[in-house]
Length: 122
Image 1: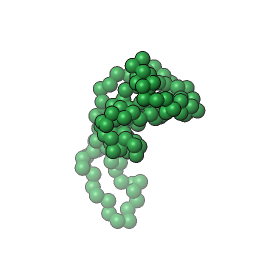
Image 2: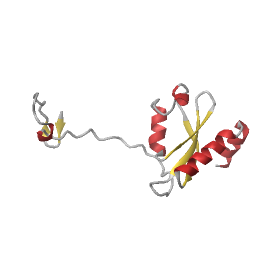
Image 3: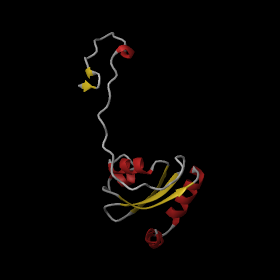
Image 4: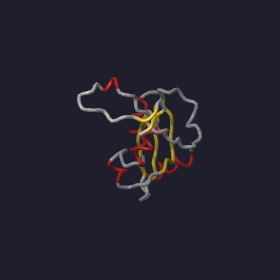
């Protein structure tokens, strides 16, 4: 492996890890996406996903992009794991975690036609 400082030598047994060269990770490719909104970093999101079987999944998170990537990788939830790929069809920013949990519970109580109407309204 090569870092900015040069090649990294394998560590010998018994050496102190703090003395070894720092290994840098390969640069990650960022997805080109429009900004989710101009919201404070500590805001929460309530979202709806459309699964490949046509079902809708409702969830909440403080990091929408990260959570969507978790769902797509099969680490998001048991429900979406077997219904990949998923598509983000609706999202709503909320101020606090309590507000997000309350809104998520409200949406989960709605029947499918009401959820589709919510999606249509944006």
